[in-house]
Length: 480
Image (cartoon, rainbow, N blue to C red; front, side, top):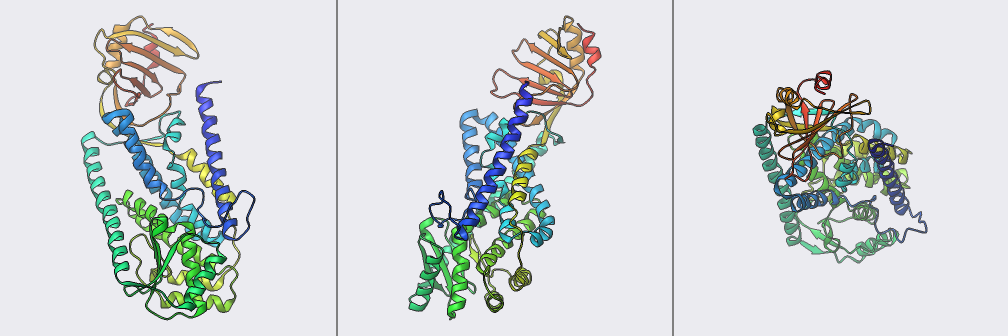
């Protein structure tokens, strides 16, 4: 059994395994929110699906730091660049595709299912080292960017990312401070009694402060840390039924840690800021967070309650800044939310669909790479006229030693290649031929199909290059 086959099987197993984890995590969250406890569920306090969304930016920063520490500045930066390209391409393609499929998905599946679909990058990239271990072949698509242009684009992208995400973090901190400054505790016994009733109904033990705030027009919840969460209400009177609907909506957000999901979506928006459809997709994802809470709040509500909730959405439309969850933050989505609120209707849970999307995401990850530094193969493998010390050609399983190294060196020197920014496990044999050699500088190379793998003595990981023209394997065989 070949190594390539084993890696393919391992990748398939990992895809099915992660798909099953997502499906089980979603089912567990759904059961917890609906009070359908099983023996391995301790409480209903958290309704997070498998992983907290804040893991996405945290793990990316963690792996970037680990790579720099383990591999050094050169290899660490290159490994981090591979991760960045994969994440940027996947998030851009996945979010764009999901945005166009969203109208169909919303008609067939629950709003909670649609909201979870946006979180697939969290589940996929929390363990990027595992995904790189499963890369057993070169990329399917290679985009060429000259080294200088790539560095300029990276600098522009990094500047945009830091400005956008840094501004968002600063805005969140400032907004949180302003809310606290212009707020006061809610002392109304009627409201506090309803608040505690809703908390008991949801089996909620997370500390959440309840306050009035004069700056807002819509109820909202803010707080990234467990002990800093606050639900703010506008300075207006609410009836008992209205208050119960508002509290249920906001506390479901707390159970799901949707403030962390908002941070994840803003991170994705900053990550793909040069792609306008990513911005639009992130807004659609935030809409699904609100729709999913509308859905569970009104799950058992009658027509009268649904109409009252729709009126509440209309009367409380306001602005939600920072990483906040709002009852009614955008007039742009009110029409759809009110239609969904009033109509109701039973929809599919979509556990199998989530399993399939997760498995396909694992299998489809890492198919695109960027190439730089087009130059001669001789320069890449450090080849001079008499630097080849030993070369073997493998054809159809038969190993042939090349004796005319001078002519082979001359032929290889005439070939052009480009270096890929790509991390993989091994280079599988392509086209039935395989050429392996060693140079006097202790650099080893292996050529298979249109790719060359080069191992430099000073580098920890091999470098993958792509040939710019077809290799004449018959000519190489004549050098034996």
